[in-house]
Length: 321
Image 1: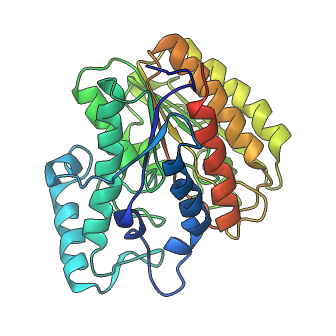
Image 2 (image 1 turned 135 degrees about the vertical axis):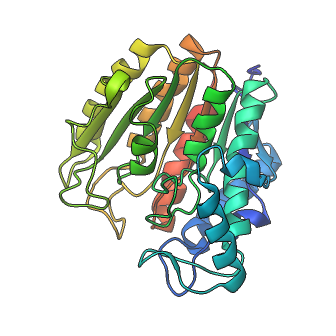
């Protein structure tokens, strides 16, 4: 339960967090979190109130199979052992240990899911998670295993009737969207740069779900150059959409690549966007689902932006409801 300082938030971090780092100057590497790692180190002196650092957890192979095919899992394991080739050409190169590194990304999200579900912690943030591009049978866009998709599958398997997934990464969360496009129990809402100007080229406003899931999915593409005002206006639509469904758990993918200056995208947010989204969803979680909200890091390729955005996420998760 929240203490006098606010909510008790677990942040997954440890030496294993740096393992998910592609080589050869790849943008998804440990350098992008170097400033955020210093921020995490300051948590241990109680300056962050109820925020605690939780060691990363390695998932089991059976966890991967909640979302991914066995053939794909075997492919990644073999590529990891050889350390050669690509998991998704040309974005996602194999490297020695990529399989094990990916297990920590998945395991830490699932550990947070369990701790929030059982009340050990009020909220949780896995900075190395949010790998939302990976599809059920392939890697994509720097993402090997889709921890968000696995977490959603776990909540549905455990019997939850409505789970909300909100994605504010600059890139459309296509792996999650298409993985659950026909699943009415997943309430999906995604604000992203228009796919006509950014990978993966998906997430049109007309994509609202299939079959019984029509109307349970919301995509809001923003024009290149959009900033805080456009984001906050769009997020009110997201808030109303999610609130109407009264979810039993909220998952937030809070990629930092929408901030001005990111080398891979064309949006102009500041960390105020992340503060606003987290604050609104945090309040909604306390209103409708007992505070059950879990955040995952996702993209972000400027160390300064990553630190600014994710610090805002932690600050707003840890405040009193």
